Image (cartoon, rainbow, N blue to C red):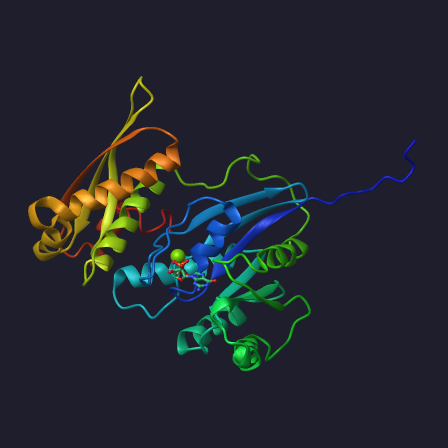
Length: 312
Ligand code: GDP
Ligand code: MG
């Protein structure tokens, strides 16, 4: 007979991941979720829309909100990013501020810290000092203190920091335990096997955009949007995918298509593999490129391409 009833508390809630572009937010999210739900790139501003990553374990459900890097708005798309990040902070039970500890804080980090101070209230904040694998031992103290001082002018009990590496996996479990400990008691919001709120089509569009960013240089990246227009599952089990790559200028279209179509072929081959991995099916991928002048500046185009959240 078991007289001692162990009451296990189930915790759940939303965790906002904020930080300037390129510090490793998407890499961290992907590491926790064990599959590619957010795209990663070495070029800033890869992530454009808010997306959920759901991690369920026996004692908790952690719903991560990956936000586009907060930065000074340069044009309409930039502003949509800031609004979406601010919105994510508003919903969150826990805020995770991701920084690149291999470098000293910049003005962008200070701005985000200020935004967190402004929004946090009594909510917990965790400072994730990422890229520790690139931090030389003699700089650990100086860099750690530089980042912590951005947050700790009015130290709060439930605020803390952890040094980690999203690529090597070091200390990811420790940060996760710190997050879970700060979540409220709550229900299972999503089925335990669901890892994202995005559709396969949306993820596939991002996988194609990731390959465009990886394989092209110059000013192309910021000007690219991808929309999956066809998604047909055949009786054989194969998936036929047709996607449109939108750019802003004829010159960018030329770069993406490449000499004799060579670049587009390369993008297609790499993206096809990623989509096959995502779906677990054989994939036929057809890509088209179209110029859509100044889509980044137009609200209606941003909405149509899914870059402005509905209802805002
Ligand atoms: P985001 O813009 O904040 O989402 O950043 P990403 O996740 O796209 O990562 C930007 C770049 O930093 C990519 O090239 C990652 O591979 C790299 N990166 C992320 N985490 C680490 C890390 O812990 N160590 C190192 N050395 N590189 C990292
Ligand atoms: Mg990202």
